[in-house]
Amino acid sequence: MEENLHEGHRKRLKQKYLNNPSSLAEHELLEILLFYAVPRRDTNEIAIKMIKKFGTLSGLCDADVKDIANVCDVKENIALLISLVSKISNRNESEKAKNHKAIKINSPENAGRHAIELFRGAKYEQFYLICLNSQKWINYSALVQEGTINEVAVYTRLIVELALRHKAHSVILSHNHPGGSLTPSKEDIDITRAIEAALETINIIVNDHIIVSGDQFVSLKQHNYI
Image 1 (tube, helix red, strand yellow):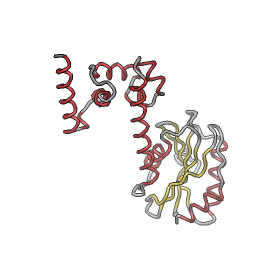
Image 2 (cartoon, helix red, strand yellow):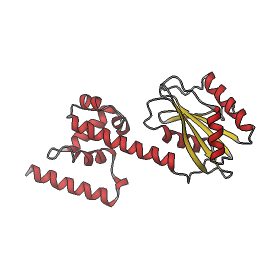
Image 3 (tube, one colour):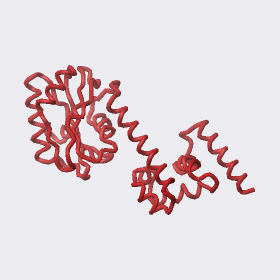
Image 4 (spheres, helix red, strand yellow):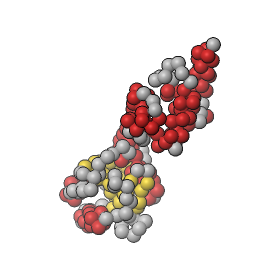
């Protein structure tokens, strides 16, 4: 009898998702995902418990597989499923941000949101060049350099070549700080000014330099470094 009740609940919840995915609460979305790792138990209670342990659904999804398994006291295949779906989602958003040209960047806020997606899931420091046309639509986004957590070697000549190749009217520079700090270092400021000076000689404008850490960003333009 209990198994029939669970089966009926699962069918109703799946139908609710099919009718309107945005109507589901966070724990209901997780509950449906758990259907595929927990075939017979009540996943509602498990989902609520797991989110509570990490504070938010995003906190749970961003956690390491071993941490999910240990903190929530669940089997590794459950933790792996949650982590895998999260990583696929992050990769999808990152690829869309890198490849989708139909994005207009006309403010530090727009630039920051786009940059966050470029670095989603990145564990090491990276430096991106975003090329814009005269209407501030993205022509091209390029990973210029990937380095260690504390150091990135940025080559001004390569940036100039990429900006010319993709017919940039202006560019946005962006790099991440995986360590968590959003404070621009002296090196960040020096690199920005060196690139700005090099591009100025070929009449290409540096609109901004965005520093990203997690889901937060800082605009060097807003802080008057550009």
